[in-house]
Amino acid sequence: MFTPARQAARKFISDEEVKDGQVPEILRGALPQSYSLSDILNNLTKDSTSKKADVLENLLILHLCLEDASKLRREPRDEEHVQKLLKWISQSILPDESIIPQSDIPSDNESTTIAQAILTTKRAASQGFECLSLLDSLLPSPPPKADPETLLPAIAFVSSRDSWVTSAIIRTAQKHLSHYNSQVTSREFIVNFLLQNFIRPLFSKSRPSTITSTGRKAIPSSEPPKRFDAAAETRDKPWKYRKPYAVTVLEWTVQNASEGIISQNWNLFIPPLLTLIDDPSTSVRLRGLNILSTFLPKFPSPILAQTGLAPVFEDAIHPTLLFLPSLTPVEESVQLLPAAYVALNALCDARFAEKNDKERIKFLDQVIRRGVLPGYQYASEHPAIVHILVKELASTTGKLGIHSVKHLKDILPILSAILEDPFTAAALLRTSIKTLEATILNAWPRISEPVHRMTILKSLVLCWNNVTKSEVSEDVTAALTKVANLFVKVVEKNDEAGIKGDMAKLVQADPRLEKLFGL
View (cartoon, rainbow, N blue to C red):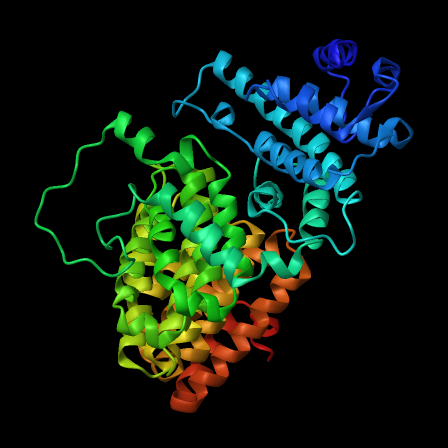
């Protein structure tokens, strides 16, 4: 019945003339003169394969048939046929393993094949969502409760981070979900369908050994680490190698689950979250850290404390802080490090309510000692990494407050090396000046000690000398002047005569320093 239309569709697909949501005009003439939804159902879905190219052919024809309402014969069982078509479309457009590389460094042929598979998936999704929209218009208003399976693809196509989406696909997917807003945000849909029926089985065999199958902290084991098994890796991670949209579904679930749902069903979230953070793939680990940062503010502090999961999360995040060059490519490090620090800060806020809690101070101390300091030691020759670490120093110093004094002996040499270097980029210079300001404000009682005072004074003078000789924007010189004045005021409280004597000698040697210190 649809053979001519199928042949025309195949030709246009091979010519790569199918655009998002568009149907070639010549295909309209290949349609039958009349058809019903049952005809479409029997001819397009009965013997269809899972190949995306075949799916795209059928979706193109379905799109045309639904658009041309004058040829569509209505029948008493149309609502039933609509539901079946909705389910078929939903199952057909989901991304599959064809878009996933089978090796860490795919060959040129494999990369070309994957690129073609991604393009076909995008086209199928575009046509599929157009069809879903047209089918929705055939249902009574408001639409009846949808089969959860028909809502899954809309969730799978809402993230701009995925390679199989376009902005147009995201808009149509969100529009489709909006018709069922009350259903998709319900406990029944999020907990029973997404978490228990979809996500849990996919992640059941790949959870880390630090937790039990129920999401609780596991008893430490003395067994040696398991050796990497490529076959087991593929077999035990269907969420990564067979259903790549599973991570997007988990992300959407965390974003849309209420605090009440999370507090009552937290054990369903923990295993997949820790699995993502533990994955060696940069893209997966990065996604996991971002999802965790969304999850933790919704996770009640009492439950976090009672379950003993806080140190589990901490131990899971910290290794990422050492994903540094040259073992990790710089472009991957600059993605992972900020995400890891954001996740640690989210964990800190979720875990500790009191700012002066001794455990909170210890936690923040570890961020500096296990993250920033070794990170700078191993990657100080990479400005992009240093920029991230210095920015984190400002944040953590602000959280520590007066307790940051213990880190002065480590922080000031880092900042001095950056400020005194005449080749430091302007962006890093700005960040370092802001970090110095945060350090002075929070560790002020120890700033006036001779060793710290002279270190800062030397850095300010040399940095000023460098910026006045180079073409640096006025905001850098203004920020440097501001922090210099702050430094003088802080030191004056403990040693007014000493700092004034030091400045007098410096200005006498170089009158240009008057502007730096506001004299």
